[in-house]
Length: 519
Image (tube, rainbow, N blue to C red; front, side):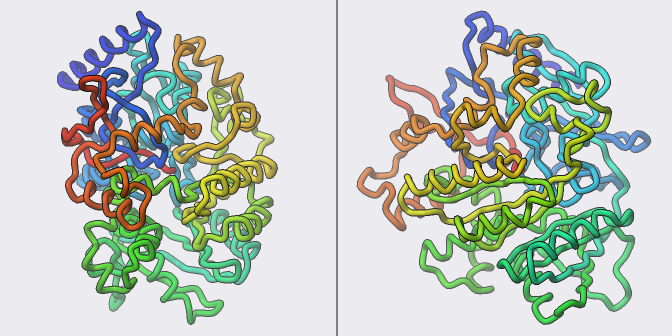
């Protein structure tokens, strides 16, 4: 812990300097899965990229003591060496523990355990004035829940204790076809109600072609069964394999046995299916050979690097939105009509916090502690090319935000937010959020809204600092090729430094792999 404590002391000293001047700051983690454009420079940034270690695995307590920049693949590797896994493992290997906590990340086991933040026992956090504080669900629960989903606007989380469970070598994964969205929602609810089921999500290939995937941990695959693999270059992408294997099944479920790591990170290759659009963009044939040949560029870490550097995220609808089960068919119809993007990801999440209002009604999502509110939300992952005109892209995103709010839902804030400030605070609990910020001396910092709103200034600065020749910017395919080149070259794509009044990119390698939260 000595190296950890020294790093925390350095962060504390840095925050004290900002606090004395009442200056806002950005937190540099090393990398991100967010699609938002951010404006960071060395002058306004607290560097936490060295906090990327698993410090302890306690087999008796089934907990892991983890620094925030540990990515999921490293955490899973450390835990499985002890026969354990986290209760919730985010779908991309590079998503970090801190990103999952600060960004309300969820995955298929969230139907049982809630968002990732609900599986954390306690945190260490450096408050804006430099105080190093401890918080848990029972000790300073306001600080704990206030920091969850706060995106660093309450302080800098430097350590987390994560709950674990016994691991098993395989996931028995049963695929159920559905011919309508209401039928798929009914199947999802049926599977969530089964005690033995540990993982539930689904894929809507179209309004009439959906598959619900229900899984549980098992010790072995039956003799003679060929396990399904998804992580190797020669393996199929998960969503393509699911569609192929269920296409002729009609109403009969299809059962697969998937090695644990292949299941946990099944969405990594192809980034769900978002990489499919890159083939269209570059006019490249989409087949098994081209996917294998380009495999190194089609994994989430590299994809997000290219997405940031090319600026193409500004031309896509990339949103995760959740509504109560009864409202989800209405939302799906709206998305089908207004966005017309397929497939969609379906992921049920138990959002209700245990402990009741007194213990858990704090922070941005204080309403998740309300026992009278819906226990579950169905998350829809809506990811795909948007309208070509920026004004139309904004209109579609704002329409999606408005529809979700009207249906009693919320969106995950890793993506760009197009709300006005008044609209934003009609959805999220400003009173509970501001109360925690005031209590812990963070009111002078930018709010969550300030961090997640569309920042056209940051976009302009990022493009101005680009080394891409100006005549080729926003020109297909050069814009995309620039992102691919920067992803191939590697290096630090978030942090900028200032020199002679001009911004330039640095090439300092990130201390930890590309990571953050989606969730």
